[in-house]
Length: 255
Image (cartoon, rainbow, N blue to C red):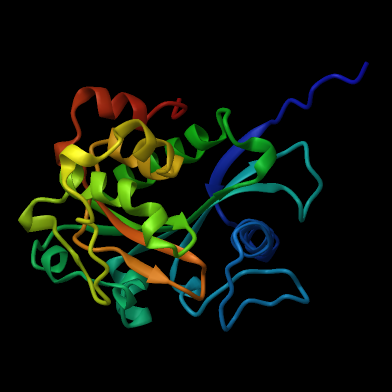
């Protein structure tokens, strides 16, 4: 009888082109093949998902050291600080959201994006390994505000009405953190007392729910990304507001 595969994880910043290309291939598998996304720099022949912002990010990768090189990245995140955004000309999500409120804070910002896991590693400890590495990065650079878009699969707003409405009523960011969608899709689609909360939570992606448990909140309005076949919300988290319970969730796996 074959023993179950036991991964040997290492979460770190990408060191070289081998790491980066493996992350881009993982992103292709998840965002293009699995979720139906596309974009002008997606390379279908090489099966890599990239965009013009990638050179300006730090790429956090989760490696399973039992896998062969080139297929070794099983989780990925990309992280952009203000200096990267200055070189790129903007943060990635500024095409979708007005970040005036965050820029006015004069606090250290970090944009998160392209979070993904290989299907074989979902539902276990892999995400906590990635988050542990993210926590170390945040601490090392004294980041104060985390933000980035997170996506619902698909662009049918009617199908997402309960989940979007719940986010608006229960998790809307305070004014000082409230970014606003540039192509405004209202999220206040039904009164709060008409929402089937269990159904709304089932319809909400696991990553969004995880950010909410950490104390995150959402900007005002969604953004429908037809090219990527997603409906996006902008999540914002002030690290100073994370309570002890949230810190415990966030830092699991950091030892």
